[in-house]
Image (cartoon, rainbow, N blue to C red; front, side, top):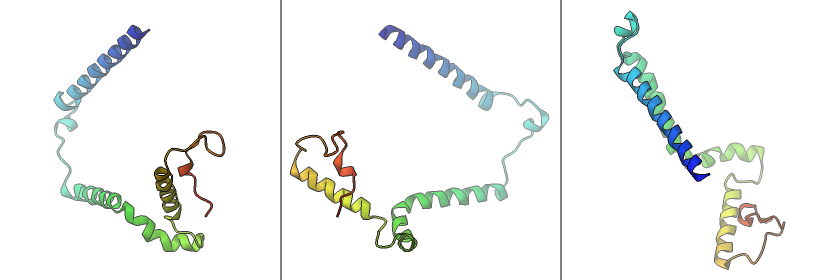
Length: 124
């Protein structure tokens, strides 16, 4: 059985390598298939700058991700009063640290299905 698995993986790997080699050759090393393609040129700055600006905004949004709960807190407070966007995370983290300091859990979770109890919010 193991020989078939290894052989199958080798076959799939070889076919993938052949496919990507052919694709690379066609895209980067091949000749143009039409006159228009032969005379193609790089897009101008008027087309590149909007893409650069949007890419920069995506990077900024990603780097600012830890700030979004604080920015959205006023809007969330209107919809869900008396509830902080981070309260579930804070309660879960505090409970997980407390259980970690208490040592291993003596048995299955109270529900009896072996769930990790630190992922459920506390009743406080």
